[in-house]
Image (cartoon, rainbow over all chains, first blue to last red):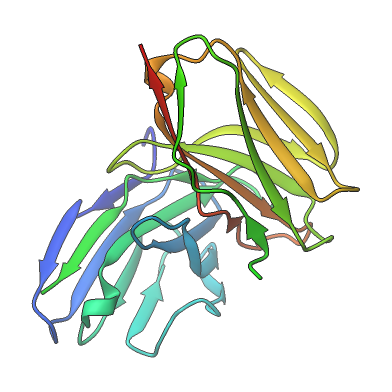
Length: 113
Length: 112
């Protein structure tokens, strides 16, 4: 596709509900990152995939957060038993090489009520 | 102390002004330096991408990196109301696949 696509754009979840956020990276991009952006803050790293391998998940805030990229293209970030502090914009970025520019999607704005 | 420091502003300037945005950092391993522009309720859009020290110019935008001072800058010439956005600096080390470390972002408002 032309750019990184994320869905849904907005998600409202009741506390305790599970959510799944989808990222379609730019076609052929090897690297895929997930970031979390709280209001008024810069994005903070969650996890990194190189093709289908999850090479770094050091930024995931708890074991309620889980990400996968089973075929090396589309990725899903899952949050179990959502809490209010999970409310944020979740951004996905992809890059074509291992040290090349990263391009971001529009993000999914998650609100936990 | 955060690895990357950026004054959140807000910064308000009149149309046509020269804007200077800055970040400082503490990790000497950072080698790649980027500036992203983020409009409200949108994802970050890459503006400038530089490796190591030096200057890079692209139209009205100039990025400068001073690794000796651990200081990077973005200059916007002839600023326009459409430049009103949040500007995020970001940086990373040499190792492949390492994540970007972002500043907080500076909110810029250009009035006509």
